Length: 440
Image 1 (cartoon, helix red, strand yellow):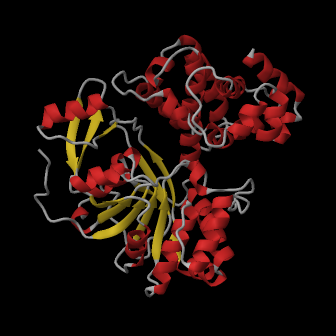
Image 2 (cartoon, one colour; image 1 turned 90 degrees about the vertical axis):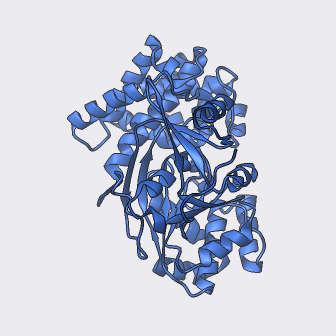
């Protein structure tokens, strides 16, 4: 049996790119839980594939959110996704972005999808980026995230130019300015007038998001069917904890996300730093160290005494560089341990280990540099990099990283690999020696 809506479909006022589990457990949940949810439907697009879009379209946009606590599950059908489309459906994407009633564009596309160069700008050397610039000039199909956003904003400008808020929800420091820069760079390269219009009409909101959402398994699908009586092909499993902190303007309004707990602040930086270093950095450490020890989930790795010792060392190091009170950080660490150790959350190390070449420069290297500048050798950071190098050599979970090739080619030599990852660290003989010892 397939469910159908018992209330009217909400009108589309949000467009989302990245129709995955995290979005449906987080932004879509906040939208559906808002008191004004009936006025804020979401048109959601996948990255490229169409399977999930087809599944959700068949289910009228409905899906089950499974909140998995340490002892039991809570299940509820979610209604905020009014439309589901494959990312390849560019005409529909352009049409939705052009509609003046659309007020918000949200993104969950991973760090790598922003196509950034080393200086944070758009990587104009990438073939797909260059192809998108040409496509924007002649009306062809775009494929990158900056290209799709620029094309959608160009369609909006052509349709009358209503303002809009773009809300990236990925683990990038300053994700609002980061998204603004790559989209504006893309627009400027194709049409300088479009770049000027974006600067005048588009608000880029900075956010911090947090809700652990492991991949759904067939066991989860069966459990939902047994509990609810309907065959949901796209349920989402998540943890009870959720956090969303935002800073920025919404020129055409937004849902009342603050009612279910979102926080609107003047400066997201302290919170995103806390989460990026302690949660995401801790996850990366456990992914590589735990994988090397034969573990396959976060819960298994965090209960391993050796992994737990390294995690505490990493947290001690990272906490020195989070601009929040010590008491707040101690409470956050205790909360993370409880979340990580939830035995019913099967959060795989393989999922976390993916795209390490993009994640480690953001999650780990800033702490390593800051600790070295203070004259300290950060054991936790060193072991995270050592675990990643072993991962590149075939130890632990399989490598799943489109950018890993050059690093794998150099993984036999720590100095050579560091010269590619972080040239300044490759010149630090003590860091090189510490990583070599940890690898050994």
